[in-house]
Length: 206
Image 1 (tube, helix red, strand yellow):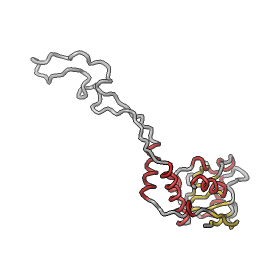
Image 2 (image 1 turned 180 degrees about the vertical axis):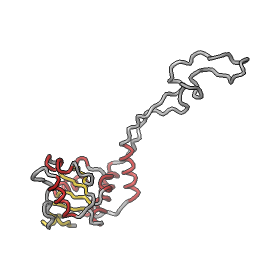
Image 3 (image 1 turned 45 degrees about the vertical axis):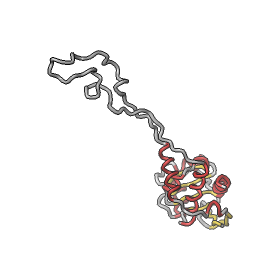
Image 4 (image 1 turned 45 degrees about the horizontal axis):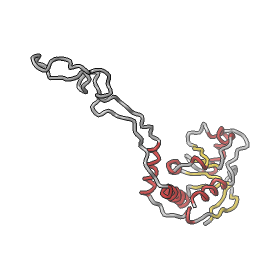
C-alpha cells in the first residue's frame, strides 16, 4: 500500500511512500487495544498509598482498663480501629498496578491503531518535521495546512527548535519514535508523522 507524503511547511504533495500491508492494513481489534491501553495507564499509577494498621501503630501494649466493673465496653488496647489514634481497619499498603502485556500483543495493538488511523485518514505523513527557527507562530501556521483541532507530531528525533515551538501549544503533542505509546495515538484527532519516523516504526512492528 502507498501513502501520500506532504510537505511539512506548505502541505503540498511531495511524493508517495510504500508501506507494508501487514503493519498498516490490519483489522481494528478493539478488545486488544482496550487491554493494552488499560495496561499502559495502570503501569503509570504510583501505587504508594499507605496507612497504618493496628499492628503498625505505636503503643497500646497495656490493657487500658480492667475487663469488668466499670460499665464500659471491654477493650484490650488503645490502638483499636474504633479508638481515636488507633490503626486503620483495612490499611492500604504500597502495591504495583502493572499488568503484563506480551510483546506480540503490544505490537499487534500498535499495528491495529496505525491501520485504523490510515483508514480514517487521520494519519498525515510529511517529508520532515524540521523547524528553521523556534517560533510558535510559525508552527501554528504550518499546522493549519492539515486542518486539525488537536494534532500529535511524531518525529524521528525531536529537535530543539521543534520542541520550543510546540511546548506552549496545549492542543499539540510532540513525541519521538522511542516514546510513542498507544494511548497518545488515540487521543489526538490527527497524527502528523515524518517519513523517517514512520519507516522506523514499520521496521519495529514487522
